Length: 102
Picture 1 (cartoon, rainbow, N blue to C red):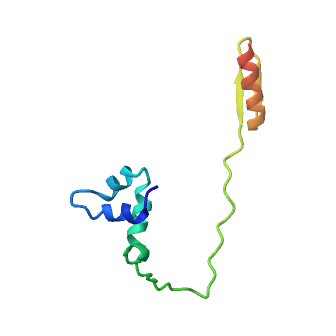
Picture 2 (cartoon, rainbow, N blue to C red):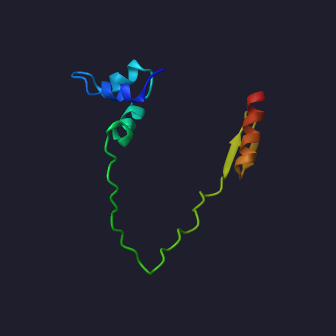
Picture 3 (spheres, rainbow, N blue to C red):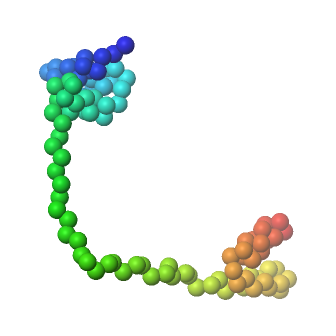
């Protein structure tokens, strides 16, 4: 069983990267980096810093309705002079399926 303290200690060996120490023990390097910050293993937790945010009393405008593409308006012409006019996607799908069968 591996000891987290041992893995963290190995990262201080000269010439050994954190990723290499993690690979030796078959764990993800992110786990080792978290251990390096953990006070339990002698690490120092990163200070939490807050960024000031300006707010406005005026609410933001909601986005407008999504613009839909123009309706489909397509005429499919088959051999023999047969024409089928499609005005929506479902009818075009049906025509494509029928054309594949012929």
